[in-house]
Length: 501
Image (cartoon, rainbow, N blue to C red; front, side, top):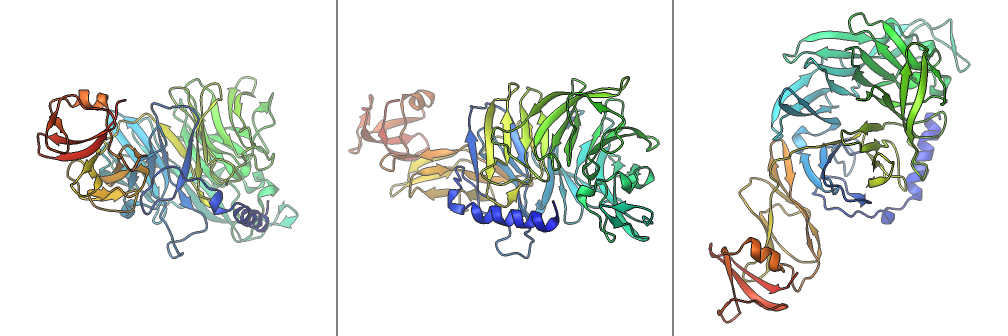
């Protein structure tokens, strides 16, 4: 698809799908994008990391929102997000190694990254040496950081034609590679595709430009079990395995000169997110730019007979199609996550499925908002703030327990308490490390009785409070649907309608 046709198609989609068709059903603070989460099955664990960003929007654009890293809890509510001063993120991940728990994300503005600890405090800064257009960051088994990068060189391609266009003598080519950086910040290894991947391996489908020929367009790096590296080259429709020590190509999967024959599949195109699975197979998010079918796919590779056998694939039942970006992850508990990247409603932004490919949950972002990847991890977050519901003598209010510096309510307020003015789902976020930690949601459905409690809460907090009627008489056996004063030992008083659960 040409750039002009792509932009025309994108504009048509945005105009066709009206804003009022978008059902935003989760609370969000000011500064973040609204979204919808469809809970198809109850998930008890697993937090999703994403970096929502609005396409074709710059900091100088009206109503610009920075693409902050966001963590969603198992029910699809925002559990944490970064503060603006550490935003502008592209690639948000979580790593566990040697008793260290770290989050990383790349800040595209100046091409560096941050490393956060399990409490979201900044541990370190990832600084590259010659990096440009970073798409992926991984933590190697030896503790080194692997950061993908693009390289610009000038090549004489006048002896070749690309989609009928004669190559130029001074063609500016954009190659792909990586930097390997040790924990002390030293560059210990690097690779540039120019050394052994020729631009003639690219497909005419992706186009040629003498002033900027992006012949590889790499987007992922993965350390294989033997310590060598797997690189995804989107414009070559190919995965290259690279010798870590020499930079030589060990094998190619897919593309014009694949070392493997696909025995039950036609291959992939425009792919992202090559990963080595624990079972020895290799997984890919196949955008399918040339086939028209977007899917996740896994292969078993036979390096004796040089065959690639498809062992698993998932195609969304409504045929969700992603023309760029995207990710596919197989989690330790067998659950899989497809992040669809560049996609728009009615297709989902991300889909979570079980080992039988049953859909468990789906995210839908506001149109023109995408996330480069969606990744799910079994996390242990800091204790989330708690919301209490109280009668302050004049109004029903929601109050945050504990002392914090910053507050961000889903109503837009930034105080430690708010007056309840209407039914709805409420959340609050408070300062935690380099970002804001979210409470569990609190649903107010009855404005006549917003703070109702039942016998379960009474049993849990017996001894901490007593019930009185409105005349000040202590009540031993509260009656259902009766107004009482709930008087705590601390002196706090709540007015409520007692309801039996």
